[in-house]
Image (tube, rainbow, N blue to C red):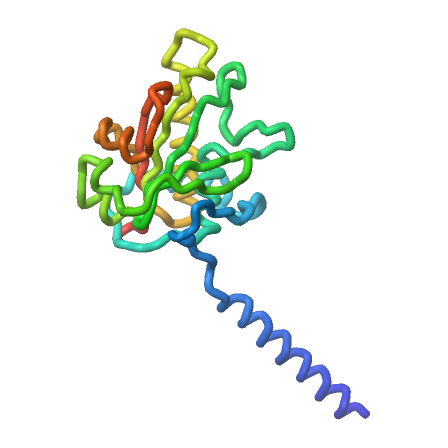
Amino acid sequence: MKHLFLLSAAVLAVSAAVLCFAQEAAPAAKIDPKAAEVALPAPAKTGGMPLMQALAERKTVRDYKPGELDAATLSEILYAANGVNRPDGKRTIPTALNMQDLEVYVALPNAVYHYDAKANKLVKIDDGDFRAEIITRKDLANNSACILVYASDSSKNRTPEIKFPAIHVGEASQDVYLYAASKGLGTVSLGMYEEKAVRKVFKLEDKMTVILAQAVGFPVK
């Protein structure tokens, strides 16, 4: 009887190990470039690097090696930038008078998208690789995993001040810096972008004011 018990325990242990390995080995979901809309995985809201450590490791990185972001990581980048973090629809960044004017656009190697924060999804704008068209430094653009573009909807700005949208973008950019530090990614905020190309690529309405771009990628070690 004792031998049977030990044998059963061993079988259970091996089965658990195999299951664990299978779960760990499962490939991360990727963004389907053919989909008109991409439902993103819910961002992880627990765990991760301690805040003070992320602050200590926050830095600008301009040199990347080519690589593709999985859907979960991209979801968390966008959540950090301007995701919905409460049932009432408020965001991960504060905005003056809760105007929620900020919109985030994403350039990936195969397509460009608008981030729908409320639905946590990407809405495709166009197919193709436009990264080098919208960023002045072409080598950085081509090696980045994604480029975020931050634009403010002027129809939501209930003040005559442009400083508020600029502050909102600064908050979003810093959130992405901290997330990148926590995940071993690199990022850089880019004021040098091609304004006309950005507006054309993302099909921006006149009411949208482009304020900043931000590249995210895998650092060259």
